Length: 394
Image (cartoon, rainbow, N blue to C red; front, side):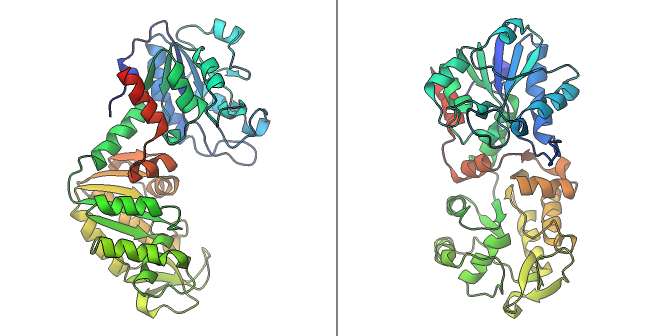
């Protein structure tokens, strides 16, 4: 992939518009519960300020109704946290699309946060007129939000078409570099771990990856569907019986690539206080719930991971939030951390597991993105990346 990078652009005296991913979780009172995405966005802002740019930053937050401002979806808490991290005041600008006094007052070395971009009607539909108005605010547009790269919206795609210069920020560039290394020219064997509750949400990813990887480990509810596909027992576990045929097709098309769990840690109810019982898959009873993989399965997976040259990880293999059923995901996480392979992990649950087990510093690259991460793995074109490539060739 060829695209301009923020680090290559002369920013002195320029007005820089950064599309960041500041969509952070909040509690019922509006307090930020995890500022990972804000902290990840700081390097681009700090670098631009140091190089003499007048910086404006925006992001979406939550799912507001377009055209309607609401306190619940306001970026005010983000502005406050960003001010703390940067060590300088970051004013929040509410009505910003057409510029005005705030833009005239924004000087080199200063930064403002532009209110939730999804308050603007036409944002999600990638309205050309809106994108053109936004583009007039800046000399340079920078996309540093990989988490939204799979969406063609006014602040992720449209503005990049019309801004004088369009480039990728350090976070977006790092994501693309890491994913390219993992998938374009990977060290072999290439092992993918795709886990989660439903096959239906990751079916196309499973099919695409099966053709590229040497081993594809499935876990969680996805694994249950594959267990059923080989006529195994899953009890009353989460399973998508209508997709068993799809799982069988993958197994037949790629024989030996998808290891099937042979044992599981089960319970009679989905609860943190449920009593865990280890069972071989063939011994599951109709009222059993599979909540984690068993030690024989873990041993097999650890052997696969130990031999890997590249590891791509998306999703936990059990209900790791419940300590009694966290063993499989913990063992998998530690095996990946101990492996000399290049490892890239992505998705909200995966990042939560990495943080819980304290292995972040031993994963080669951690992506905070979910949907964009999966679509890249699938081989889809990401609109926000494609427009940066187009502009780089212009």
